[in-house]
Image (cartoon, rainbow, N blue to C red; front, side, top):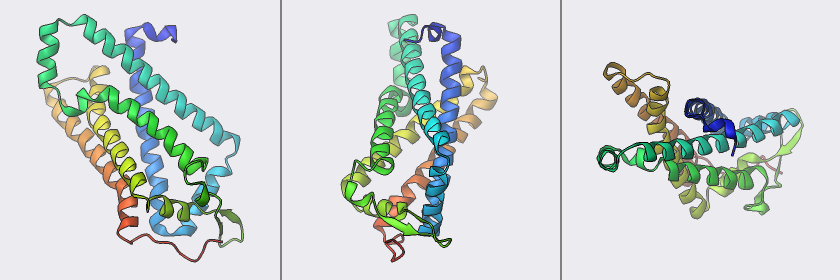
Length: 232
């Protein structure tokens, strides 16, 4: 698949660049989602703003899926190359020294991709919980738009969805905490002077993202975020 990725150097570059793009998406996506704390007006106006992008939004979504696929394909290829290139004794030693995050990189990557598909089916296409997908909200400027706020509230009132979301976000952040350090090593930045700082930065970013994403379902369960009378 994708013969040009058979080059180890190219694969490392593609994996690093695609990983950076995914991190950028996670930050941007969280920034938008946190608008829910500003009330239905802000999050619903934001959602409509995305819809107004039209075909550009479709291309961005396709690009995101392609980015995920490239990231997973190159990860599989490089992991296989590493296994075949190293002696068994060395591999066992590295396995003992590796962290939980690094040992679950492949599994967490597939879990993340699966969750992205599920997340799109839920909040983008309304296949999951369709009864809450067609709600409408009237913005202050008079426009009637989809009620994303109510859909998110209803969605995260379901314990199964909250647990699924918790597991997926945790896998994402575990993956990210290790991946940032690996990306810098791939780029040749591998020195005892910087490795500790890079590792802490990766863990810090992963923690911030985890807290940010989980603040929404936790806020809903705690009653901080609740349904309003603004939807129609």
